[in-house]
Image (cartoon, rainbow, N blue to C red; front, side, top):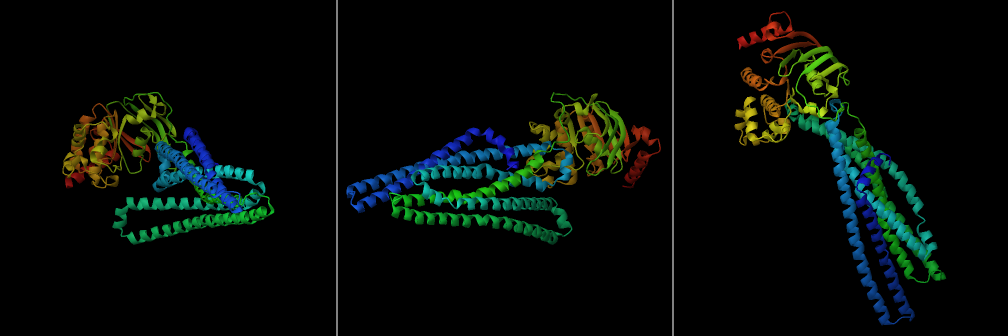
Length: 585
């Protein structure tokens, strides 16, 4: 139960509903005592008539009264039970809602390095399957546990007031029940954890296969991947059956114990009645009804225990992520406006997960309104610079300043809100094109959306679709071509109208003619913004105010286009190579 203690804050938050549910349960169980009592009175009245101590009219009156009281108390108890479910189960739905939001917020706050180490399928499983199992604990498990405890407390207390000796014999099987629950609960916890881990693997595999279905089809691997899925599913079935076998022990075992208790009541109660230790034979029937009223609470102990153990295993998996502190923290809650001057001062950075040193003592600066182009071979550290500016990572050595302030001292959300970012791998959501474009500015008008789409040279492609800007894209924007996705991403960054614009090789899938048009539009759009362009093409860099060449994390060259083409080095070689390729075309 240690892991489930994390949920105590929700019981405190919803204490009114929780306490009200307990109160209703107590009252409902008190009313449930009346039915066996009136049945006992009915049997006693019949016995008195048989013995000649009561008239027919008296017996009929007693029976009619008992029937009416049984109906009335049963209806009241049923209504209170309904209220109990409404109170406690609804509370559990609120807790589920809060916990899912808490987990989702934690996912949002966790750093990029976290997502490199964890699979999407596992993350999805924890926020859906695991949270669902925890809700089962907060709702049904707690409700039935309360019902069981209160039923035992109310009914056994009443039984003791009638006949302590008969009650003692009736409850003798309970120690066996307690030990059995302890042993089986341990088995459930162990097997539930294994099942949940396997379910995460299955979810991850499925998610990856659906996302990469085009690659699977292209390599004709449908049968192989189908066999892999069958193997995972087969393992999941084995673990689920292993858990189900343990759960299946509870029902029959509980029924056996209740049956034994009934036999004890009949045998011991019968002997006590014969000896005159109990005055009315109706007490035997009353005790049998009480024992049977305890049948469901006792039988539900197995189910309750199962739900608690499964919730414990699930909450442990959830807590593993909730306890992780994000690598990137907001160190300043005060609003900090950003203008756009960026400076790197002897910056070095190494990725923790791969131990690759991406940058080594990099120093440069970009003034507000200037454009910086960064070129270099693959893996030279270009994209890392953009990630560090956005504080997706923090530097290992040196400092990055924005407007003269250390980037780590700025309000994190103000910093990121001041950046329009176009990633190298254009990511679009399964939503309309218009919603994808205005992702960074939800209040944007239709005219604004069209304007930036025109600047990104994607407007003509969009209006060719049947639903134009309301066209719903497939997962990750699969409806569009690579070049179209890049241009929609550029439009999304432009509509934000942020003071800093970061473009990470975002024209690689665009033909040179379209690239030239987009770059000309960007020149006009970015004249008062700080712009950093990462590219492999000289055509994307030639109009920049400054150009730096990276190689293996270090700056080899820096200057303007005219300066760099007039000195030997990587930039001049790249320029001559791409110029000759263009002439050949």
